Image (cartoon, rainbow, N blue to C red):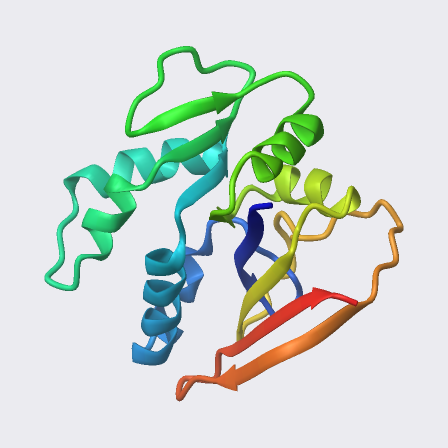
Length: 178
């Protein structure tokens, strides 16, 4: 059974949309956390909007550490009802998304990383398909924007399994369903 790990950037007030605001706090420890997440992943699971943003940015990027090479090489499972031409190592997840992701996890022993993709996150979270949640909480409030958890009124208990604080004040928290 595969493991689905959600890695998310959040403001203190829970906003995750377009995390360009995270730049001032993106220190070496946050960079190492992101690097380690990517290097230990076997594939990515992305919603269409996140996929299109990544596909625009990463193919033209290079770095001596190999982050961009890894990002470009990883297989990507993309949830989209509108895209038809797979590019950038992508396959499309179609049909009933929850069932398709459940099957994807059943068909592999790999680590699948979900980044961004709030709508997809909430659908999978509601059905208990997220095995681990890794949050980077940045010391800023934004007041508005897309939040990670929607307002469906779900209550779920999580167990904190790791915490660290970066020098710039980013709280890096890892949770698993209790």
